[in-house]
Length: 252
Ligand code: G3P
Image (tube, rainbow, N blue to C red; front, side):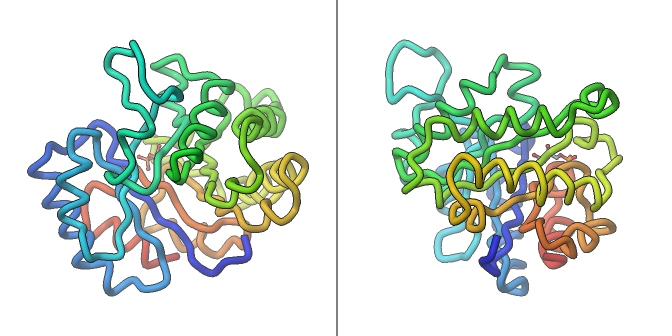
């Protein structure tokens, strides 16, 4: 990406309640003023979105949802539609590997969700990543290309400038075993960048922020930040403590 604003997003997953989420978000906002030039985002559970949005009012910290449904309304018990998120958050994480693994999300549903989010002015952070088995059998690039093609399939190229893609190798998530910067660069600067360019053109490819996710912490963040193809991070465990998360953000 050519823009100089890196993105560091904290995916809180199924952690925090409304009270502790507001406290965490407020601490992030207080510290974010010392981290200029980085778009910091927090992604609380759905039930905390409104309270976290209010706690962050007037700060530079953005809010993301962790998932969204592809339809605007209907008989989909337990789901949250894109129009319901408008005004609550600016970003939405789509296709996280935990959604793919535990909740049956497919390449195709990820593409539909990304398109639906963009239609409602929400900025998708689409996650892609190979499993350990796929990497060890030499299929990582093929899997990533397939996931990216499907994620972009339904997008209007005019709106696609609002998209970000997170490369989260499944074997690096929550394991303490981050990818090496070289591996991340091969996938992000190589497979992901060239696939976006092939599907949506080189302009969109050069504008699309690419985030690395998977065991990012204050000790390894600078190594990832130094890779030109990496424009930020999607952080899980290390985003649940404000000081730790801000240290990661400061590295970018
Ligand atoms: O979405 C962030 C993520 O899956 C990485 O989690 O705990 O390895 O930083 P973690």
